[in-house]
Amino acid sequence: GCPSLPQPLLASLSLACKLLLPQQLVDALMQAATEGSVLIGAALFLVTPYSISRIGFVFFSLAYPLRCSVDALDSAPEAVLVRTQVMLRYWMAYCLLLGLLWLIPLIAWLPFSTQLQLLFVVWAQLPYFRAATRLLYMLTPLARRSSG
Picture (cartoon, helix red, strand yellow):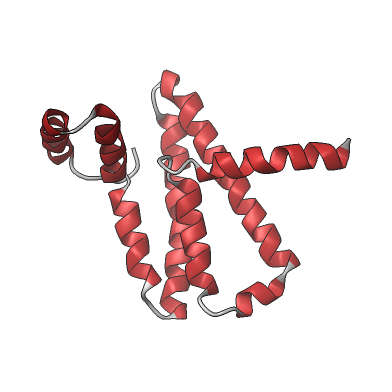
């Protein structure tokens, strides 16, 4: 799958959490631990100058999701549908971001716009936040109304 914490560390964290915390909180913490490498990597690029942030944006908006998309297609048959849908929703949200940037080019001139774009793509692709799904469900009725 996509990069995450080592499996033995995840297993020991899971066991310790299950003994001490409610199940819902344990599930949220385990999801965050699984996605931790993405969050830490993106956070490092948020505090860098524009030229370096841009490299982080390209990596976390294209390279990392591409790898996760390939992993989703290569996963077990029962998991393919869910993981593929998650990544498809991300790519749709990413296309919306690119369209917005193309329609409103002045956004690129705003201070910290690259860092904001990086935050958006990380927020949209991590399954814990389900941001791409929420965004698309919000925009789908608008699209249906305007075409119908």
